[in-house]
Image: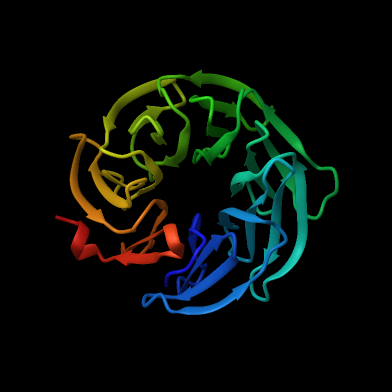
Length: 294
């Protein structure tokens, strides 16, 4: 599939039979695994930046908006793709959206704010304020009590979800942060990876405010996904390459030219370990397990 504009977000559907992709053209649904375009549907926003299914698979949250005007989270009932509500608390585009639980979503915006909003409840917003510039990425630790965010201000921030208060700020990056990804559950303290335009991926233990290690790449990483097992991470980069990184030895073990332009989004199938990459010119492609696992 190839057409403008670029693909900026990807997600597997709850039944794992399709891949959905977000762009300025709205939402496209592709069959899996052959990535044949099945259908499209429009959403009420100029840009789509983030896609997130609820844990029960019934609802899809779409984050985006109209730049410098409004940030929007639209929630769809996935079976029929009908909107059940639109949250427009932000004054600039929403770049990331995730589900806090079955009723609430968290949205990160270029207006510098993070909001927690309850679907179907008017004026239910609570805020996490502290970033000095736009917020680009968020994730929740497995304890469901700790929120991690990253932003244009180059900082990784740790928040107490129950109070909305900032716990700590981690400032080792030297350029805007593009993505944040939580390591799959393992032994010991939680680990989070952050990708930034300084060409680094940094690995943190956010609950104690410790940076474990970092690796510098040949091109700025735009999107991250941990591979099953939690020892490797895949980065979609601005030069169109996907790089597979050993997070223990801190080395790039494989590198693939995938997109003619920028690679903006990457996801990994939860069962067959295939990756899907999206980027410039509306390109969506897959990488099979045998091609990227040594």
